[in-house]
Length: 268
Image (cartoon, rainbow, N blue to C red; front, side, top):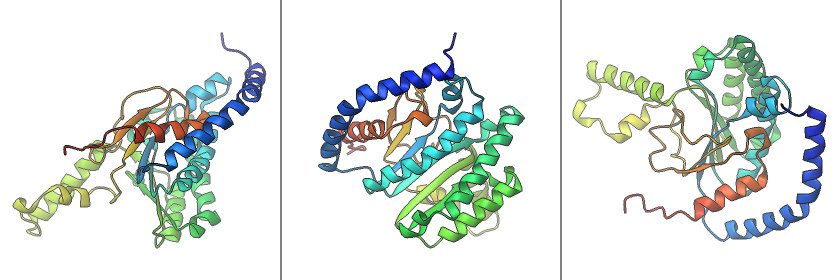
């Protein structure tokens, strides 16, 4: 039997009061360690666990999605702190369309709200952040597509940081659509089959993004779930049991430290 939300909130408040002094010391130590080594240039994150976090609080799924949306802005600030220049967020997979219609409708409302907020966020222009969305965007409601177009247009010329959202996205779809585009060029005589190489495929994916050095998945699941299969072949993977809405700065630092402790030979 799950505890009432008021009791859960009280227990969380007590836990934080006890752990805050210790956590502050741990954070300072982790920051020193991380700044002394190279950080990943690009990170991918599978933002999982919104619904389970909401259920833990006795709420409907979109309660978790709302908190998950707000976590994105916070996570972006953390990445900037360590000059991580590329961030790819797995926000909504192609398979997620099989969820209940009521939940999808709420998610779409939150998406529109989130992109509208980004379009007016001074951080985007001040820090030179380019915002893009990869996936089969035509499957999204027109209002969401319009909000996406607006923020992409506003940030198109920014080149300091890349913020990419994978929405209505499937990694296999990405590769299939790239193959179709390449096949069309071969059929029209614009491309010789012998000229097709890795770069050709990469250039025909939904967008040219840096291969993530590190992929983080929250909620305890240990799989990529169709996220960037082409781009993730040499990515370091970090799995945490923390649900996305509850993901903390110290969890982020632990992921960076785990990455720095890997021996990245990449075949060499």
